[in-house]
Amino acid sequence: MAFYKPKFIQTWLDIKRDGGYRLLIKKKGWKIVSVFILFYLVRDSILYLLIPYLAVQGAITCS
Image 1 (spheres, helix red, strand yellow):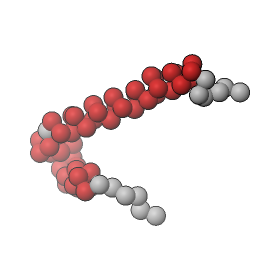
Image 2 (image 1 turned 120 degrees about the horizontal axis):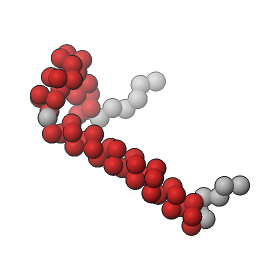
Image 3 (image 1 turned 135 degrees about the vertical axis):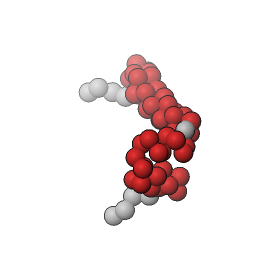
């Protein structure tokens, strides 16, 4: 079963496959950096802020 990949990710993977990370950063530049930062910002917000908040509020029970 193939996973759905958006077209922009597929083009980024094709560029990386052809010339490596150096070519990918040369062609896409700040878009790569912003997607990387945005991904980790959302992930860490959920992991370190939302889950502990819900645990304190009682929405998630530990029993």
